[in-house]
Length: 416
Ligand SMILES: *Cc1c(COP(=O)(O)O)cnc(C)c1O
Image (cartoon, rainbow, N blue to C red):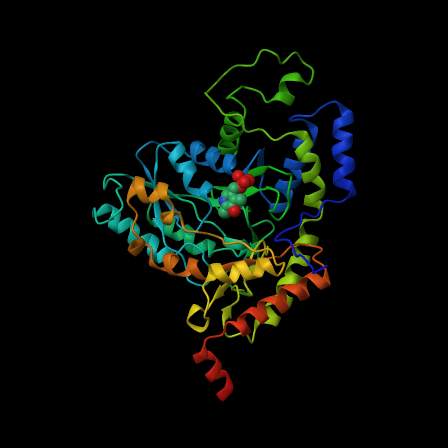
């Protein structure tokens, strides 16, 4: 039978399974001692004093912008090149997401465009229907694929414009950045923003099935997020029921139901212990792919940087459509037919009906994302990817590029 390479395969081992069983046998299923341990160990892993475990990164992002006091009618800069969650949490609180274009190589938020968007907003020059008096209060950058943005430039930009920074770090655990080769490494979540939000969704770098974490250096922000993660009650479930007659809680605010379960944390504790080992396995796969595609003129490989420790959550190639006789969608169809799972990260937000129709975002306002997304294909990358699987991805991609080379490219190739 022909080989099938899935886009992702979670790496779940015996310790995770044993811990889930132990959690079931313990009789404590929801938020309890395993969540507490997961929070402490995750906080230590990123070097943050506070970590609040929740049931998704989306929940973490929502709690983050709530804790920072986002109000209806205020504006928040959000990359257009991201997943739905980054912008929708701004809408939850009635804010206006101001979409920002991306860097054409890293896909990370383009700070020069963020500046242009702020100026356009203030001058009433945005084609998008965002009121000119919407006060910009924050920015939510995403470290796309796990290659961190320049944190220092981001912080300086936010400071100049009086904005808070919440990181959508859904892809960026574990990941680090440094200014240059003489500077110290800083981990994502180690005071890289006011609040960093991580995802433990099934196909993220570590998983709890569904889950997320918000980390911060600010005790008050941590306290607010913890409060709002469980109905705004004065104690969490563990605090309420672990002896001492804590049944008499108080409702301090109309909170949400975002707590993580001990069953999920049981998986997370052991995923966390292997997080760096799994990152290194993905990095080894990435190296193989980078090398194998170095001489393929029909595609561009993802960016790397000696001043980044890349989590390698994704391996997005960019097709050089000027050199190919087929488009991205046809390329992906053929990949799938030949047993290579693949995906696209992402159709930019401004090209989704909701953002187009509600705010009237126009493609011309976000030209790089509009152009580049049509070339994107994310290839399989995951820990314990088998040798035969890596070879199949390499051979299939190389063969598709060769087969669909345009006549012009063929001639150029023949001349050389
Ligand atoms: C996966 C993802 C999220 C949401 O994570 P959940 O844990 O599923 O809520 C948010 N932002 C980005 C960039 C993501 O890729």
